[in-house]
Image (cartoon, rainbow, N blue to C red; front, side):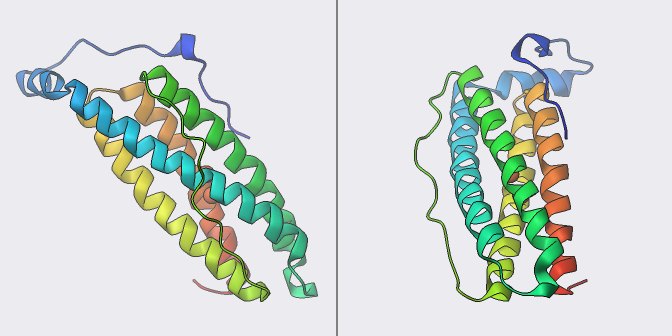
Length: 169
Ligand SMILES: [Fe+2]
Ligand SMILES: [Fe+2]
């Protein structure tokens, strides 16, 4: 389990090593902060959806061949909750309002299809967090990008778990 830095630990990096970095910092206007908040709320809505899917899928997955992955999905559910809590905290820290709406959860009666749904969701999530890390770094929000890197590492583990279960390499 990863631990996230508390709000008090976060240092705002204002010292800049070069002129171009200083220009980047000036470019980090309130509009880019607004864009980051908007993006983080999309990420939060995606985390809510992931929690729902992993709670349901881990308890309804059928078949002896899926015994291990069902246990892993339970762990994913807990980790997605940690991600949601961290992303909401980051949104609040930036002065935004964390969304109360999740993206619509998907469902299938077919076990393999469930895992495929989860895999696609993880891939979309990883892509979005990569973009958010780039945005955060452009805006000089380095503590945020660090927190997102911790999250993305776990999303990549989730993707590997799902690929292994589906036999996709
Ligand atoms: Fe997550
Ligand atoms: Fe995940």
